[in-house]
Image 1 (cartoon, rainbow, N blue to C red):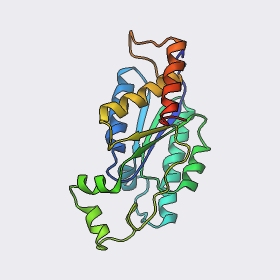
Image 2 (image 1 turned 60 degrees about the horizontal axis):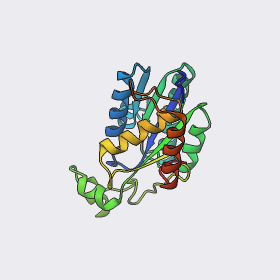
Image 3 (image 1 turned 90 degrees about the vertical axis):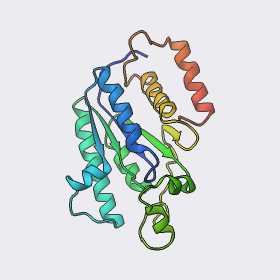
Length: 204
């Protein structure tokens, strides 16, 4: 597909430790190398700046996500790519945010609670499971899995490079990202790749 510069939002959602920020930074680096105008909004960073003072009630979490979504839509309207990496656990607020930008790509970083607990160097999951921490997403506070994410990456079963490659390829085939020099895809090959990804339930 021919690349035509246009703004869009690339939204990473998933539990803490699933790889959202790592993947987002890796994709951002590739975009910058290809000359794209890209900004990244990381959930943890936004909380210390744009959403300073908010707590972790559902209302405050929704307000935080709305603010990220609002900034993302402004950037997209000005032909920038905004990468957002936030847990965004509730389906209703994700639907609300999705409705704002013209071009929205949701990436669900999927990983089991068992693996996340093993990865967690701070031990927060173990504390939450033991009842020492309350209101922890994925343990005693819900995480509602996306039903219609454009891309699902299983960070438990595949490497960061593999997940990143699939995200980049999807964006290329949708005309949201220019192909790497010398790596253009002809329309027939593009269709075959998309069909394979859909058959594997990696994209919708």
